[in-house]
Length: 148
Image 1 (spheres, rainbow, N blue to C red):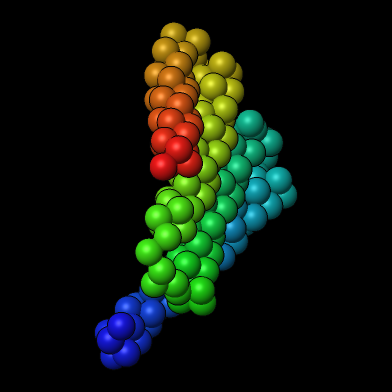
Image 2 (cartoon, rainbow, N blue to C red; image 1 turned 135 degrees about the horizontal axis):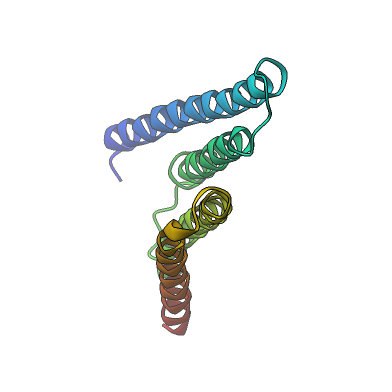
């Protein structure tokens, strides 16, 4: 293990994670601003004024979880062991976060299409089908990596 390279690597991961945390705070702030603006300053409260903040919050949560995972795995608890299971934990945790975010977004799309235009519902079905394939693929990945 090369100390200088390790310092550069950890510093890069730390800076990147901090920028991502900042983006998370900005996204959550934007979500709160949009919701308060639509609640108090616009004439009518629409379902879209609720969807936009939920989408922003979901995105903020996914960014936060990714930044937290990077900090945990690459900066705070850096492990150079050859344990293959620890390599997969980060990928599995991140994939689960992304799948949850996509499922929430898919639900938002279904509601929005159901309110606006039923003819576009096939696009929501495609999105949910794609997320389902990701879910099955992650399950298979976990099954085969645990089997090793």
